Length: 345
Image (cartoon, rainbow, N blue to C red; front, side):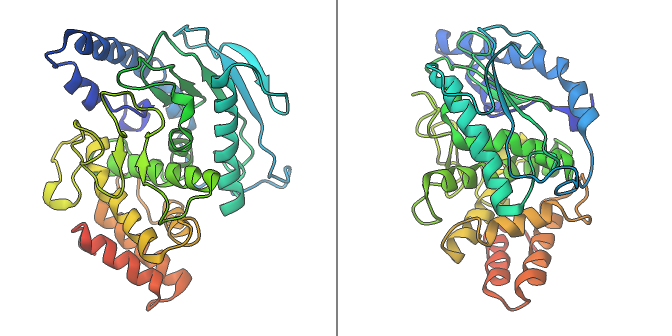
């Protein structure tokens, strides 16, 4: 299996591995169960991602006007097979009594709306791809993931995670893995893998901020705050203060703490903080300038699938300078942010 084809889960394997070594027998068992299910699906779904992996999707097609999301929510009824499940809500149908169905449907819509309104991007592939969500995956499954085709939501085990459909940022995060796959197709290991994860956090947090009317100052910049259980409270990750999100958070805040061979979810804290610093320096909405700079970089043909932090950083500066001017506040903010996290330009 190539590095392109990993299952993209919101709860990182490295954290589950750490929890699986706990002295708490129940915690250990729950982590091992989640790891076993993740590994099985990781293998089963690998080929889907490799079929999708591409480069530079067109923003829209002439055959479609764009701007209209097409969502379908399926109920897995706690099954863990590769099938989608039973359709419980299609686009335009009224809300169901099941809160997970409603949250999944709404979260897919908020993500589509963010990409369309901000970048005129017509869904994940830029060509109107239908958004599929599968709720009630597994029994008390403490994770959510994008498999290259659909979103799968666990109901949570109550300790690691609660109902995963409750996280708008989590849905935005996972679907952005699809956007990245169609654009830069960043290899899911090393620094390119950490960038892959960071880009999903960057746009996931913007989806949440936009949906809830938050700006760079009023946002808490926490990822997964709405879905964590007591073991991982108050959040999975902090873009503002990497390493401070929960007692198990091992993210470095700058390159001095970079972990050679570390998990992609660990080292992603460095570019995450860079984006936070740019957005907070510029103020206002993160999608006014900071978001477009990152999006332009993701779509930049000069961005290689094996890009390093430095290569990505240089392209963010180049795109800021090209759009706003070499001496602009935006370019200055980008340069200063990467300097703060000690990624040399």
